Image 1 (cartoon, rainbow, N blue to C red):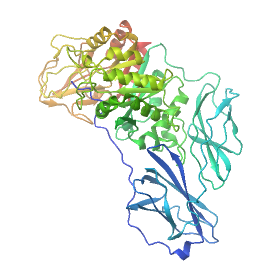
Image 2: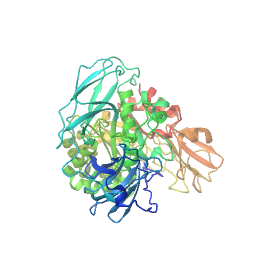
Image 3: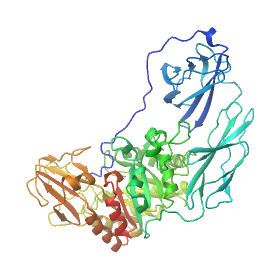
Image 4: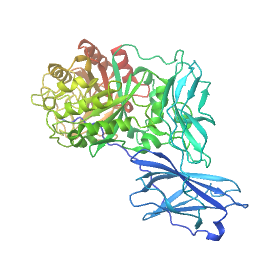
Length: 607
């Protein structure tokens, strides 16, 4: 059985332009006319952000600039902006873009980069000459100010105060950031923000600036909710209504956080699992950093309607999720680690569960986005069993990992897990101590889909997400009701079980029989992967022709598909309520129609 989460994921790589180097100006031309100053503006352990400022200190215009420096071995530039950055070994060169090379007397320009390693630049040259104090020995950027406190909160305003940053040459002022965008620069350690919306969540951070205009790291984040009512009511009922948002969906699928708003889905869900963080060397880590926190959004693409700026501390999906939570305060966001592709690292993680938990908390509580995530979701496919790879950690490993996570995160964070739904005798549910681990977790996302599919190329055709067994089902124990019953029997409370719904279908081709159980010649054609297709496509290309075991199937031409519709989801939600389940979850948002038909069916079915 396969529970494939990450099918045909698209990735974009941010490439540096490695154009040929051009001739540099002579030292005599530039030695006394301009300076280049470096500052490390952010440091997140595994990497950092650096910025160079080039300033024309002469009396005539500068027509171009080139900054050179050396990094120690192990430190390198991974992406850059506002300059063309190239390297030769450990020597780095940054040349102006076509639009920012000219500097009038007294003018300055800044370019930046993300880097890996921990070294600092040395041997700075500007246009072939001295940088005239480029790295400014002894002039370090300021420290991070204290996390702001909030007082005098009203419907439309809040007063913020923070402890001062320190700097070897003195702090000049502070930038106040709301939801990652600068709203004010002040010389004191307090600020009153006005013009806010009633009943809305905001996140505030502060950043210090010294007399050389070097900025230090951003402070911790302070969440503030204004008084008064919000115009976006939460969904009704007390059930969990959770959807997975895929990090890579912003590429080929062109699905962004704002789509949750335009589809109407954001007002009908309670939780989002952001998928996926990776598990490397026994530790949690951000996977695609560009999509997660660097991708810039224009005003029309953004949840808030405000365009990202090149120098704001947080962009990408994380900033969009922050804006979504401000607009829909009832939504909680969890960072999901693992999945089909990244579960291979859990075996090493389980060998030192405490260290793994500590690394996960460090990612979740990174000061750049600490206010975005309300918990963590572990998607280990599968403990002590086989998925993309086989795990031999033992039956107790999953329980031990869950216990370590709860010990590290405490009671204020949500901790959940996506788990197998294989209820066959001696199957994957029997391979790990899911009953024992439940005491440490808020709920399980039971992956009650992908039971059958075209990995069995010749069939028999069968619904991939049957609610119950039926006459002719290819394997007993491969259905939702059996999985839920088995987990209950192992001591998992019903209220900690969420029923899984796939927002996609699985199908075969070469099928002549309309009813389930037919033979096939292989997988049907899919947009991203053979044998799988989104609901939003199938509802029109191959409409349902029947139902079996509480889910729909469709026979069109020689293709046979099974998938859930609003009607079958209604049936499943009614069943979930009779079982006392905690709610439902789905994989994943982008498979739904543009008006959120399937999310609406889950919401109304559980309300």
